[in-house]
Image (cartoon, rainbow, N blue to C red; front, side, top):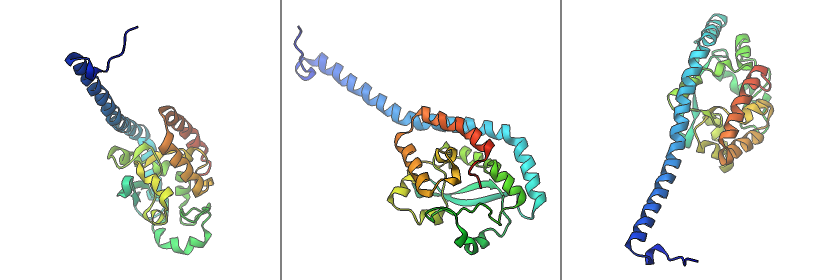
Length: 234
């Protein structure tokens, strides 16, 4: 049996081969670490572009219905908190009356979201009749494909919170801000607003810590029936 001799003691040739091997391993690690974000960004660009083209007729019809059913703009821009706590402008089709923000404080006591961090009530009087339909099937969220294109969001990731919610976050909840926010996520296909805030956070943190390509595909495949059925959407 040949005795193993460490490269450092086996001459210049062995030392050179060992150095090349270490360099190759380092390059592979670097490519692996940088390739993931690059690939995800490419998927985001292709997916969002295809989504905007495919959904263009729906967007146009929804925009017309929004504009003609209640006074106010078609689109609604809202400040959300993204990766690293950076604020950005999120775009939606307007689903509420134009005085919705001013009426929020008056409805605070009716909040049905467990934990009091987020605000949700099933029969929110601020939502327009057309807006209720848009929300049920997540049509109001379609303009966020533009957010994916401009890089402020990704297709898969925790949903972006508003600043008032982040102000109530503890260390565990702030972990949601470690990654870029997404159009859809695990809790969106697991009950949506029917889940408590703590359950949503647990699913987001679990996704951040241990998600795989298979998990991502599973979420994507589950998103379509979740949207069509509209369960937990209000």
